[in-house]
Image (tube, rainbow, N blue to C red):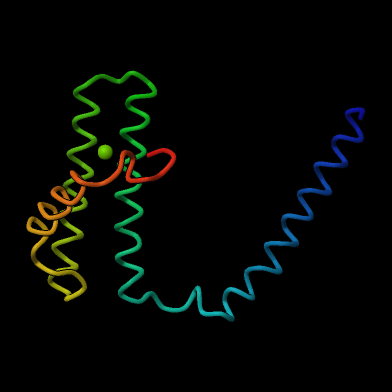
Length: 121
Ligand SMILES: [Mg+2]
């Protein structure tokens, strides 16, 4: 494929993606995915931010940014997690006994199969 053919292929792909977006978006609007935000959207955004902090740990390790940075990003994960958990408890979406549940799960995990029976993890 020469450079002119490649340029035409990119243009076709660009048009295709624009056409797909133009087709997909109105359907999603009709299905309510762009309606006024509801309470759960707020939780989803906070969960996404927890994910972003997990990614920051990965990047700190991948880029050898140091043990301090890795620890700092773990702190961010916990801060965001406890913030969301507290809000979910206040809103009646979670129970206020996280510590007890965590201790129970830690005990249960002691008796589970290696890798909890999964191939990796
Ligand atoms: Mg961070």
